[in-house]
Length: 249
Length: 294
Ligand SMILES: Nc1ncnc2c1ncn2[C@@H]1O[C@H](COP(=O)(O)OP(=O)(O)OP(=O)(O)O)[C@@H](O)[C@H]1O
Ligand SMILES: [Mg+2]
Image 1 (tube, rainbow over the protein chains, first blue to last red):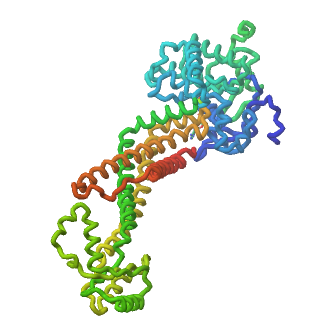
Image 2 (cartoon, chains in turn brown, red):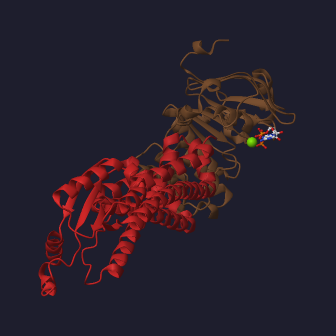
Image 3 (cartoon, each protein chain N blue to C red):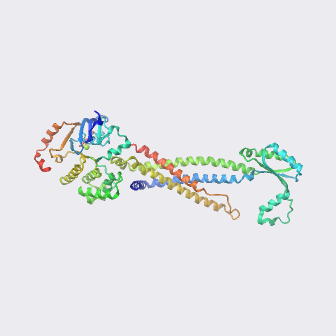
């Protein structure tokens, strides 16, 4: 399949991607997936199913063992190291393990994503305050990241991921440590970014996140992507309260 | 502008993180520069002295009596038989006396009552100025000694010989200390920068993930190397200036107020500092090149 013919509105395109960790852990097997610009996609699956691996492949933190990956028009197999930043600037990722700098303040941890683009100091500060406000963390502006609770750290990694309003947002278990109200705030932020044009791929166990029928939910099982039909069935089983669809909009 | 501010911010943070080895590096760099430039200074001055030394190349042949003009012609032809020379000059007792008087200047009155012919007549032979004639000067002197009527032949022999071997030695020392300078500075700088890299590894990896360019990550380290080189070399030069003035004070008695020493010229100082800075940048470059290939 020729990757050059991919229409510009396909943001993420995986073709028969496999990832095997040494010695023989098959984290992903023949995954093909296409995500359009502006979509919100929920990636579910049991622990160890390969969700994080998939996100790491898309952000090129890891190379696939087999297959082709196209992200935001970059063929990742041909992207040289010196141009890596071009890809990374299109992607904001909230990591499952947060990847915060424990010795630096919350504000610094968020600003780091903007500083690499040489964003003016004042803009950086305004944006940081705005995000902290949205995520109910304003009072932690100058706290060292290492002193935060896990739920707070989770929100900081989300704030850093979205600070530049990237074209693609990859969120790995973004609400794993959050209560209902804070989860709503995070989702609110995601929806707003989506309206601004960001494409979202959210790996999650949290069934509360994808109640809407129009939401696209995909499932990984032992590294294999389930067909859409199968996923629908599972979803229906898991969620009796499908009546809330209309309200949610 | 923003680029500079961000780069400088990173550099400062790096240097604070590893300030102990930063100090060590600065010390090493300045010491290496001091050693190297000290020998270079000695060499430069030695060269200058040797340039003003040309007069001492002449051979003075003292005679028992003033030669008559035909004798002079004979002497001349005998001298020329040995070698081509630049100049041959016959000095009578009176000429010698006058020169001496002039050389004494205001102190000439010590000569009152001394007979004008107390200095022997002499022939001054100026060999052609080349290293070749310099090396044959001993044989020349031996030859002149055999001429009739010669009391004694004099030249600044030991002085000149020693001085030339001294200059040779200094040259070797300069090359060695230059090699030392190159090795210590690049090694030390590379070492400290590697320390900084390790202590910031987590952050550097994160920077890559959030879209920092290679230059964004590298420039602060190159800047750090340049700063270490510049500050280290400049303080090494400062130390050399202090040392130079101290030595000058030690030598400067009232009698010899005009020592022929000079300090390094500004272009040379600039060149040495620039070279040291460049070396340190190279050191840091070698350290980050291996590291930043993630
Ligand atoms: N660096 C690695 N080296 C070896 N095996 C790995 C590595 N990373 C992941 N794996 C394996 O790959 C499989 C998929 O892991 P992955 O982290 O993608 O799962 P996940 O779906 O994100 O799980 P969770 O929901 O618990 O976060 C697991 O079996 C895991 O042990
Ligand atoms: Mg995971």
